[in-house]
Structure formats: structure tokens, C-alpha cells
Length: 131
Length: 224
Image 1: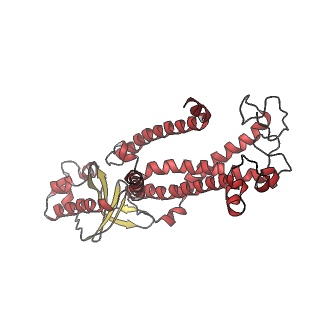
Image 2: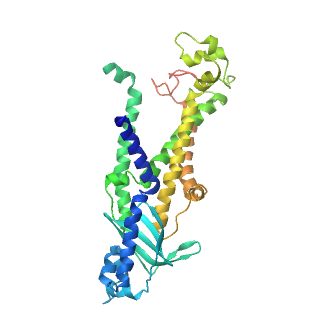
Image 3: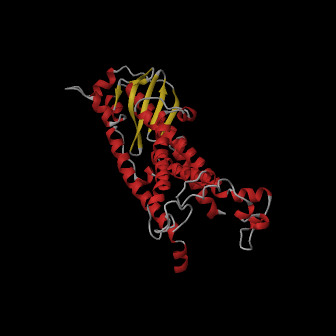
């Protein structure tokens, strides 16, 4: 019984991952990454907020002498209660209050790929910061 | 053992080829996937992780469904349509499911006929259509798998491009789903049409897919 059950469980598990990107067990880490980003912004911890961004997103905020840590605090990112987590493969989307945040997997972690995003009709979201 | 290998050489050869090609697809697909991830500013994944992604699943299933559709259609359509001169076709005039005597079913079954060919009713009907039904079933299952995994891969791309994911029913009306489907179907239909037509005039000595080399061009249903 056990010998036959294992392949079936494996197939179901892999099938589940294919369908949802193993979404259910990743909702918590995704939400935690977004929560940690907004918590750092709220306590004016620029370096902490930038450490939660994808490197490309952090780099996009740098200009001239201005660093990511300075710029990220000027964006007026407020966040809010986290809801409606959607995870597909290596990508995720989370609502944080009125804000929409996109998150990408970075090695074993999830990092914020875009924040301060507002929807546009039939076009990609417009984001204050993105990779 | 040696006899078993020889008796099943054709199936084993193509199964091994399939596995080799699948490994090649996995390795090249993994490399391409990681290139895209890096280009989008994201992180790379291991080969084992890539094999569980919807991107790999949709690339595999979209090809599988079209192959099963090709054989499903060929099996069923050749019951009713003929191609004069083709070794894969019946003689013109024999279109249809043919008589019980021709098909050796029921009272016409021989002592070596499968049990369900001797049976009557549903069992005989099922067995008489089992090849087409299984191919058709595999086609629908793999097409369903393509739609489910394709939607997951599509939604991942949507999020990477800062757009919202879509429900499965919306994906079924999406250009991406039909583009993946039609680009596979057209190549299968071309292959079948060219095989049916070219085998009228061309030969491959020793192959049962060809007529004997000396068979006339108009000879139909004759295997070499």
C-alpha cells in the first residue's frame, strides 16, 4: 500500500505545484516579505526597506548621489492590511491597503519587485518602484 | 530477455528516444527559463525546481496533446476516408466500419481472437473502438493539462509584467492558449497529409509504412 501510495502522492504534489506554484505554503512567506518591507518604510529604515527589494528594483531607485535607502523613503508608500495574495510560479501579487505590490522569488526568499502600483485599464500597473 | 527486447524493439526504441528528448528539453528549457528570470531581474531556479514549474509542464503537454490528436484523428478518419495508393488506407469502396465477418467479431471470431471480440454488446463495442477511444481520451487529458499548466505559466508571466492573473475560463479564450494549440496542430496535420500523399509515389524498402518497392502507384492498403 505504502509503495503504491508514494508515487500517487508525489504526482498529486507535483501536479499541485504545477497548477498553483505550490501557492498555499508560500502565502505566508510572501506576505511576510511584503509586511517586512512596509514595516521598514514605516520606521524610516531605508536600508532595511531596500534589503527587501529585488536588487534590480533597488538599483532603479539610485540616481547620481542619491541612494536607494534615501529614495525609497520619499515615495510615500503606506501599505496597509495585506490581502488577496496571488502566487503563480516565481511571481506573486499582494494587496496592501490601497497599494498593490508585486513580489518575486529570489533564491530561497521572496523580495518586493514592484511597489506603489496602481492599476491602469488594459495596461500594466504603474508602479513607483519596480525591477 | 533477448527475444523480449527484439519483439518489442520498436516500442522500446521510441520510448528511449522520447526519454532522451525529454531530458534534452528539460536541460535546454531550464537554461532558457533561468535566462528569462535573470533578464526580468528575478532569481534562478534549480533543475529539480524547473521540472515542477508550469513553464515546463505546458511545453511538454502542448506537444503531447497534438501527437495524441494526430493519431486519434488518423485512426478514426481512416475508417471513413480513403486515399487511393496509400499503404495506410483501405481500398476505395471499403469505407465504414465493415462487416462482422471482415472484422472477425462475434460468431466470426477465431479461436485466437481477443475475448472481447467474441463477446457481444457493450464489451464488443468498447473493444472495437478501444484504440481510438484511448487515443482520444489521452488527447483530451493532455489538452486539459496544457490548458491548466498554460494558464499557470501565463499568469506567472502576467505578474512578471505587472498585470493581473486571469481565471482558467478566460485563459481558454486567450490568444496565447490557441496560438500554442494551433501551432502544434498544423504541424501534425501537415505530417499526416504528406505521409498519405507521398507514400503513393515513394517507397522505403522493407518498411511496413511503405508499399513494396515494385507495387504499382495505384495499389492501396498494401504494406511492404
